[in-house]
Amino acid sequence: MNVRVIAATHCDLRTAITENRFRQDLYYRLTMVEIRTPPLAERSGDLALLVRHYIQHFARPFGKPVLGLTWRAEIVITRHHWPGNVRELENVIGHACMMAASERIDVRDLPDYLRSVNVPSAEAIFSTDTNRETDALPSLDEQEKRLVLEALSQSNGNQSEAARILKIGRDALRYKMRKFAIESSTTQ
Image (spheres, rainbow, N blue to C red):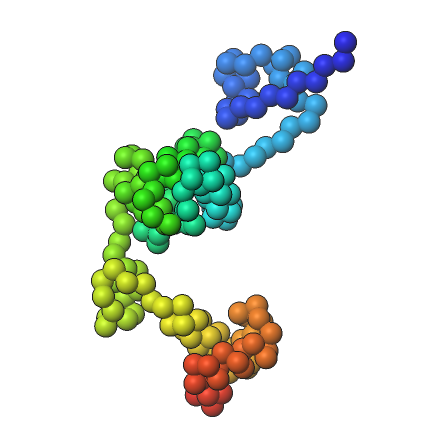
């Protein structure tokens, strides 16, 4: 009989062996190939991709036109430490998709234990612009212009370097400079 066993655990088995909580002989039988997957808390870069995947996974079966998260829900999701790892995230997004009443999942759609996270107002996050209403986000054009100006400032007006910083082509940078009436002489 040819049998292969795939086992998973959230415990550090080497530590468990030294503490006599796991049999050493069993460990060596199971560990021909050991793959360590870091917890979700250590993979914050994967969070947005996983959220998008689970929204698509749950929105269709629930018949909901959910497209994404509000900025407030995004803050709550990114601040959480995810002790239940990917399975906890899957359950949270499934719950939120089921409860969502609009195209965007908001904090009110999340499970109760996540709603208690303190979410700052938009003014607190974007305090550089005081003429904006408290709960409004800056427009995409405002954010884009600020990024272009910052890249040009960091590169001392060198457009090729600013384009590399923004990870766009030089022609695209020049287009954006014309669009936002940014003159090359004002950036140096």
